[in-house]
Image 1 (cartoon, rainbow, N blue to C red):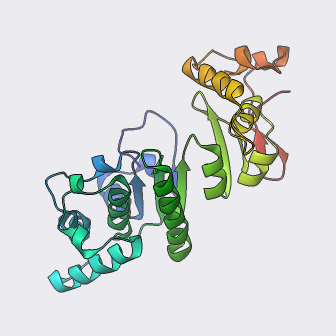
Image 2 (image 1 turned 135 degrees about the vertical axis):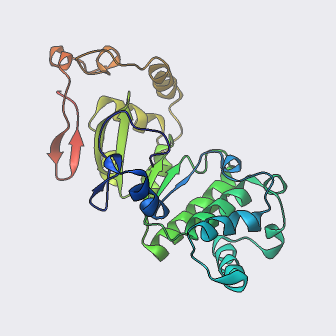
Image 3 (image 1 turned 180 degrees about the vertical axis):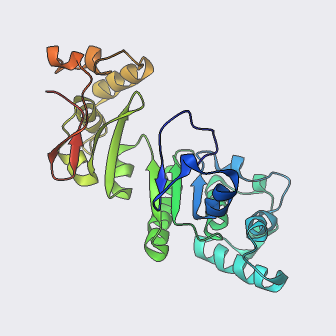
Length: 257
């Protein structure tokens, strides 16, 4: 999203390298890329009513002509995300977590983005509200043909929301493939532990505890595989850093075993 200056690497959006763009080029493409933050209340100005927060990006991007069209657009947006007229005159602190996240989503949709980063969008919400917001995200995806980069620690949520799933360890992708395939046929030892810990048939508390311990001390361990010292399947070949390789169509894993 270029909200934080990158140190290296490339990110391509619709064929253009975002890392190489200047300020003017980036400004022109920003409306097409939006983000949903983990803490929704931090995304809204606490001194602005919800209505003002919704219309601010439309005014900046010159999307509407006049206050009448502005009001019509806002009414369409709140109806889409399940809010009501009364919510428009409230401040963020007067809304629940789920309502704030819906307001944030309405503001994002006002710009008609092509791509949305959803950074743990439901982790701060009650379980019942989580399901509502996730269903809403699914409906919006179908309605507007928008792409999501959905980030979460909950493997089951990722599986349900995603077409493709990538598992990261120490900042590196260790496995990537179709979501169903990765969840049902994990190949990397770390992915196997995650799947076991977050299985449908009750959470495996011992495995979950092991995963938490592994993540708490995760770090760059040099030239070899970062997971090597903690891997139950480690061998001498793991002392050389593995590259992602395709083991099945569209299914990649970074493991030498």
